[in-house]
Each structure stands twice: as C-alpha cells, then as structure tokens.
Image 1: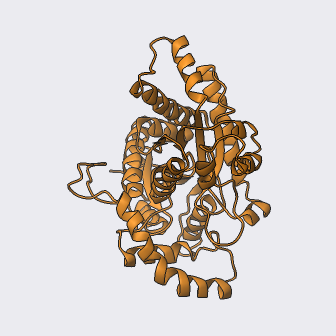
Image 2: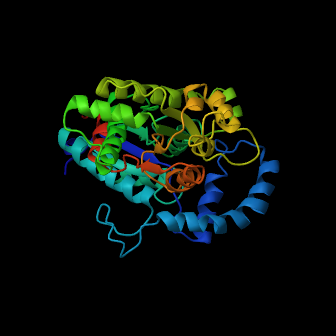
Image 3: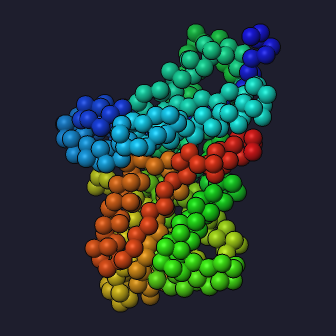
Length: 389
C-alpha cells in the first residue's frame, strides 16, 4: 500500500481498563497503577503511599475477587462477545464496540480514518496502542481522542489526556500528529436518545410482563402514568470527592446536565413527566473524605420506605426533591449512564447491592437497566459523537 493510500487520521477510543484476571495478583497490579495516578488520588505521596502499600494493596485485592468473579465471563457460560467467550465485560464490550465503530467509520471515510481502542490502565494501554498505531500507519497526521466517559471528570478523561500528551512529549518522536480531544458527550442528542430509549424499553417490558402492556399510544401513556405512581427511576453516576468539584472539576454539573436531558427526552417521547420519579444519585464512594452525593445506596434504602419515615424525609431533602418523601416506591428502575459499558461498579453497586437494599426495605421489583455496551444504539452514539453517523 502506498503512503498516499494510507489513512491520514486516527481515532483513539479509551476506556479505564480493568484487571487481566479475577485473581489477587492481577487485581493488585491493576489497583497499584490506578491508585498511583495523582489525578485519581491527589493526596501527597508521603501520606498516600503508606496507605496504598500498607493497607490497600495487601488486603483489598482478596476482598475484591468475589466481585470480579461475579461479572467475569467464563468459558462454557454460553456468552460470546466479539467472538470471545472469556474475560472482563469491560474489556470484551469495549473491544466489540470499537470493532463495530471501526467498521462504520473506515467504510464511511473510504479508509482514510482508522479506529483503535486503548485502556488508561492495565493491558493495551495508551503508549502501547499509539506506538503500534504509528508503526502500522506512519501516514497518520491527525489524532482524535475520545474517552469513553460521557461526562468529563479530571479523574477519568483528564487522566487519558495526560497519557496521550505524555506519549508525544518524547523528544525522539519527530512526527507528531495534530491532536483533538473530545471532552465529553453528556448532552449529545444521540447519547441521550439511546439512554432514554433503553430505559423506556425496560419499562415497557416490565409492563408487558405484568400484563399491563398496551397497544395504542394513549393506552401506553396511561399504563406508564399508572406505573410511575409506585415507581422510582434511579439514575446513578460514579462519585468523586467533593473537594475535586470545589477545585473546579465540573463533573457534577455534567452529570446533572445528562439527567435533565434524559428527563426532557422522556417527556417529549411519552408526554409523561418523570420529575417526581427520577432520583439523581452517585455510587462507588470510598474512604473517609466527603464525596459527591446523595448516595445511590441511600436511595435504594429509602425509596421503598413509607411516607413520613425520617430517613426518607432526609434523603428527599438531600435530593432537593420533595416528591420523593411522599412516594413509597414498590418498583425501581436503575440505570448508570456514566458508564459506557458494564463493569464491576455497575453490576456490584447497582444490580446487586442497590437491588438488595431496595428489597430488604420493602421494595418488590428492582430492574437494573444495563449500559449501552456494544449495542447498535451505542455504536450509533459513538459514531455521531465522532461526526460519522
């Protein structure tokens, strides 16, 4: 192939990464790299490293193994993703998504654009992927970097930028492409449509399964209105420390923008106002410092409680949504739009723990709505964000 016929542009999709196996050594190796990133934990090293190496790395990996075993796709399970039947859902779904986006983009660009996947931490990291990219395609003169995090945060997207720019600061690298980063796509119409449609599909399946499905638009709207009288819609995002937000990280605002956009889309699509049913919350808090809330675990605990319960009233005030205090939810739909693909955080924190808390406190039905993963809607979303839809 001549250089003139080689691609001039590359797209780098980047996800967080994960452990290479559900074992203590593999988890320890991943956590060591992840928790050593100053963007993730900015505590002075002389304070943080004794905690990391003395308390976290010796003990947390073993405790995390059951969570990873819970989500790990194993041979013989009957699950095949992108031709693979073993591995982490985060890795397999990310690879499958990238392959489908690659096929679409390369076809539409006539081969002028190539698409690759990298992980910020662990295997197939950014330096390795970029080195292979430039070795295979020395013709690339423009690089577009898209973190697979719909809402920008310094703890996720900025970490990716750091590593990309670090790769190109090597003084021996003579040919540096023009670099464009896509900050986020928290309010992109294709993304909001995909998330809202996935949620509505789950609600309609629930109505059909409980013999409340309807054939006409008016009857579907009526059935949805009735369902929402006893239903909460938990929209949960990964949390960050409050002091990061106070320091200028606008992640909470980007999450709130997504929730507002989802709510507005649901109203346009169904004619039903979800205001009194939607609960905006955050998950995966850890450590002793204050994190952005309210907590998804608190939502799952208090939503099924009867009106008048003090815990329910306190949570309602934390959410700034007085309607929550007056509703006793029997059904909960939970979705985590901050994750492009399912992983240990979504499955453990929502599908498992939030479900358990909801039912232990009086709830009857908890429906976890999976991430977009490698669905056609996700492929369309990423292509649209890249302006190839």
